[in-house]
Length: 365
Image: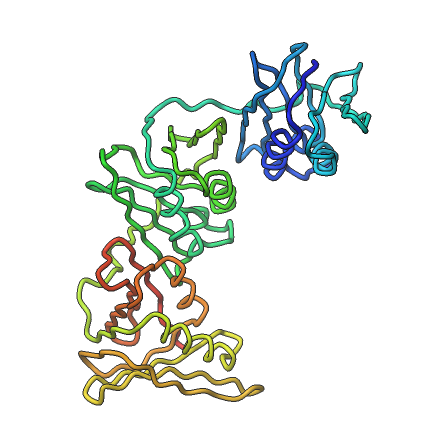
């Protein structure tokens, strides 16, 4: 194999691919990237068996071939080469030789036969705006469980409904749901993407304005866009029937400016206990909405918040961190907080926005 390409292009491709390699020293192939030649391009592949990627970049192919090399070592070398030069990469016996105007570097390689295949998914394909799809994921993924004990909730659940694709995540203490409208409704079974793969999917496609091609089958989902082909395994399980826990009515309702509530939460966080507990007291007849927190080692705080309140009197304890997390997903300046007694979940929505719903379970202590 012998190729020549721009250092910047191969550096960026290797950097993206290397991020998903496994750091298992007993399986060196999983710590590696596979470079193969095409007609006027090269493909750089990496996998950790749960997530796989193939990135195609333009190159001058002088001799065809393929090579497997440690991703971290190759990435470290490329990151420190002068960017205004091209790089020549070729095989020399069992080694990879990297040559620039000022450098000549030799890296040991691994057997190509040990590198796992990256599966191709061609069933149930559709296209959707990458910006919308990634926004859907980013709106909910922080609510997923980070523990693998219950894989069904250590995931983002994605399914079609009417003219929307719906994204949902929960860790059983809070739940986020985001709906994105698409021009052509797609028909596919709901899929569970592992939480640990979600951040990489976001990283690969977050800045794109183009359409994302998605294909899926029972075990895998693939994403392709602008020379990047990414596959993720799917979780075999059933997401909880969450619609039954979303209250259809509310006994108490608060309409408040998001920034005012955020400021109150940040102050309360300073004085909250190790459980991140804040207390809300609502008295609609007195037009009263107050947030308080207390820490025996720090002090205590009470903050009255200007808001429109209606319904029944209520006192409820919530996790401050769970409360503040949803602000990143709601673009509206005002929020609606809906309550149903102090033992039922609180529903948070943006005023005039029916696409985003966030639930927080109350704290009993």
